[in-house]
Amino acid sequence: MTSIHHGTIDPDDGWGGDGDPLDLAIARLRAGATPTSDEIYVLTEAVRTAQRGFDEIGRANTVLDQASEAGDDLASLLEDALKREAREEIPAVLGALRAEARRVERSEADRAVALRILHGDQPDEHEALDSVPALTADLLPRMPTLYDEGEASGSSLADFWDRPQLNSAQERVHRERVEKTAAHLLDVVERAADRSFANPRYTRAALDEADRAYALWCACLDER
Image: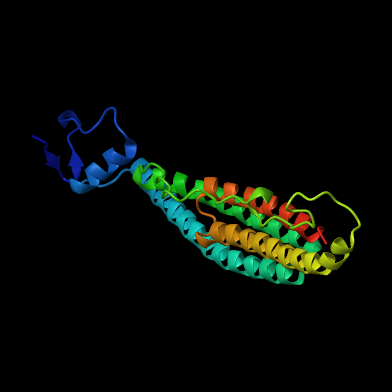
């Protein structure tokens, strides 16, 4: 049985020797022993390490909050640029989204280290999300032509009279293609920002799809 003598622990009772210094110091304190200077140092460093860990977790929470606000702001900028068809403004928005995503990914990696130090926790499994939807040119409404029914092209009177109707149909479909591609681009960006970019794999897939959607949107604009 362990014996305590005037605030010290008998070294022959199994309290000394090998073992984690912090665990040993805590055990001595619980037993009512007066800590040595070395134990005070170990305990102080443990408290400082814990405080740094909690500070890191707090900083990571702040990054997520900021990322949520930034994501909303950037999605609004994207939506406005799409409405104005200001294609030259959009690459900067997509670049800012990627920068924000990288900042969150680094911060979440630091959080995982802090949690492992504090609690021995393993990184949480990311919540399963649906796959990022993809849009290709084949999925867009097809632009009509004057010879959709397979007639040979020519310069007949019928061709002449049908052309205004064709132009109207093409303008309508052109608008549908542009609007559908713009909506898809905005959707995948909002999906990435919705969870503050906290799922790195999903975020990267969404932003890669956003790049492809932007290129497709530009191609649709140029169909006029």
